[in-house]
Image 1 (cartoon, rainbow, N blue to C red):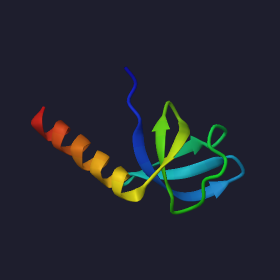
Image 2: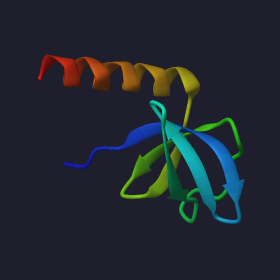
Image 3: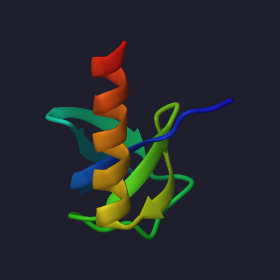
Length: 72
């Protein structure tokens, strides 16, 4: 089973995006999802943006992951 985490693109330089996930910013490859723009949300897996996601879907997923972490 794989887990993809949604994050918001805050900056793009060539094929690398800086993506904010709950206040943590990471560099993510856009090789698999090159049509992303700053401000959009992407699903991240192993350092790659693999799919654009709707903002409301991203927020809901992050909320559920936070609740899960708090329960553990």
